[in-house]
Length: 211
Image: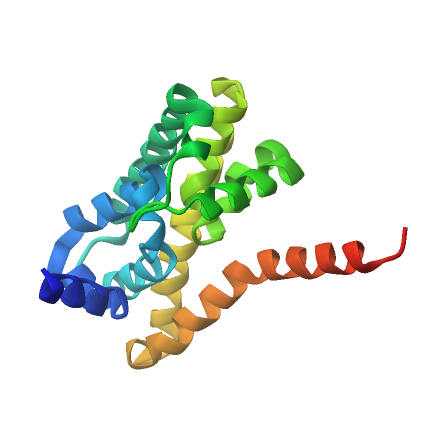
């Protein structure tokens, strides 16, 4: 079991090897799990999508077919997350932490939702961890499903295609980009978490001001 987890996390640090190991079907399941199932928060969606675009640039997989299938996975995943929140409700806030569930992540998504409202479903797509819990929080908060679906489709399609085509066209323009993909992934993760860092700094500054 320990060896299995070691191998899994080894793959998570090497998105291209992970895609090669699981194939397109596995990639679809990963995107679905990260956006729809609460235990998928640790999955590296951004880096996998960029890596898939880079791989598609070599002709190994078809970029358009991949994008369409992953868009469906992302939209369906968020829909499942919404209904988990809708049916489970506040009980999730009473659930104890475990290896695959962290209450702090749920609370972070709740704060993000309270600040940005329905737009959270779009913004969260580009923020690791928050994108896993945002649809569930929307379900708990009782966002009308019709409104949620519009944000879900727009955000899901935007996220998938921006990352996928970003990797695809970058690989076309920059020779041997796959050899430096780790730097690219670090840059993507940094940009993704930047809004959270800025929000945290603003809240600290605001709380430190005398009333």
